[in-house]
Image (cartoon, rainbow, N blue to C red):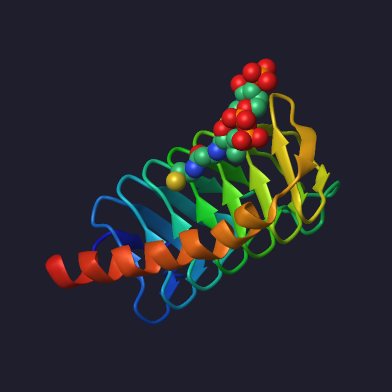
Length: 179
Ligand SMILES: CC(C)(COP(=O)(O)OP(=O)(O)OC[C@H]1O[C@@H](n2cnc3c(N)ncnc32)[C@H](O)[C@@H]1OP(=O)(O)O)[C@@H](O)C(=O)NCCC(=O)NCCS
């Protein structure tokens, strides 16, 4: 794929049945697990640190993924680590943060360096998650800056897996129709 580009001789590593739209651009040390999908116009740079994306995770259109370099004050820098079954809505901005499993990142949300999101979390559209904040499992967060809004309902918890599964089916159709 022409849109997988090296940085310091490291190319993205793409596991099985992954869909990367041809308009997305990925640089450097990026790993993408089985059945994940990267949609149109996503920009991901694993240059000054690494990006790890789990299985069955979808990164929707126009999202930006980046990292922070190592420094004296911050010896490990901030890689970007995203777990399994995560739905990242359109035009989200994820920078040097860590996301667990079964999370919905709403459209246009911004998650900043050092923030950590537990498993089974909803982040509302347009939410700003400031640096180093910890988001507790099982809750909805909304607002700028974010506030913990309420515990998730069972139907929302179930939706997290349903959304990931729907995107696995959708990317299979795209692979069939565009390869
Ligand atoms: C937050 C969200 C989950 C709805 O939660 P909810 O509890 O059902 O919220 P409601 O629609 O009942 O609204 C409750 C209040 O929250 C506000 N609200 C809703 N979504 C909000 C958001 N993203 N940020 C801030 N406030 C929001 C509503 O305006 C309402 O405020 P009010 O009580 O002052 O009128 C939903 O609006 C959302 O942001 N979903 C993300 C969808 C998405 O981006 N998906 C990815 C693409 S597939």
